[in-house]
Length: 156
Image (cartoon, rainbow, N blue to C red; front, side, top):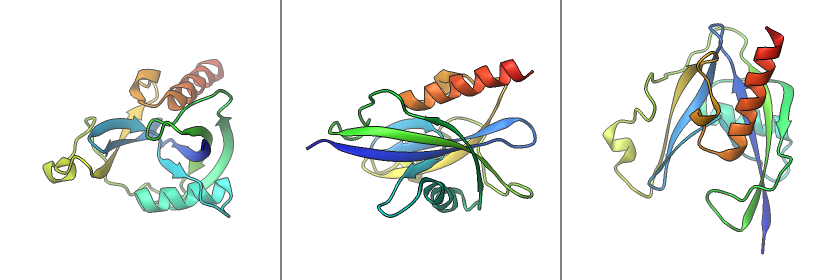
């Protein structure tokens, strides 16, 4: 039986015009994606994003404007019986961003990737002027990055 899997992601930009991304090791594979995750039953999308950011980063975010919702068919990268619907918002932090980040993609400690069935996550910033669709691993994230880059170009 096919299911819908609703995912909610946040775009967090810092004062240096960099976007926060998550480098993840999931069951032996490496992915770069935007921070966020799965909607739980009984939860609204904004509450989901606040919860996911707090769980993943320890940051208490304010969910701002809606950026994009998937408008095409996308099968899950992790379960070929699920259709993914992703919702993206811009998020903000009041005050300084206190988060341990890396400077290189997939900069995991050896113990973080030792178990091929395990999962691990590290964060890094990408400067907006260097950001491109190919920085992202997942198809819907690529669409969002193109959309954001197009908006940045037209607003300058």
